[in-house]
Image (cartoon, rainbow, N blue to C red; front, side, top):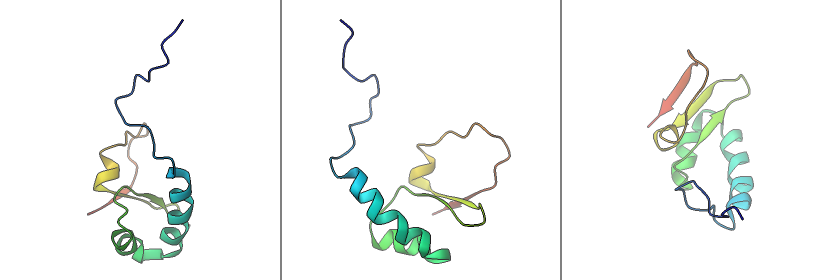
Length: 79
């Protein structure tokens, strides 16, 4: 039988990952231009945010985990 072990070396998500995502994403979206300040206050380091106008912003920690297939994307890298 095939192995059930994941081939990924990343750890499994925490049991509360979905709840944390639900609780933390809305405030970061609603914070507008102050979202990165709020993310720091909430100790959220990996963020990919697309605002209402389609502007893409990512934190350094999140960028390290991403690979974009489209070229020439205008992505705002947030420290």
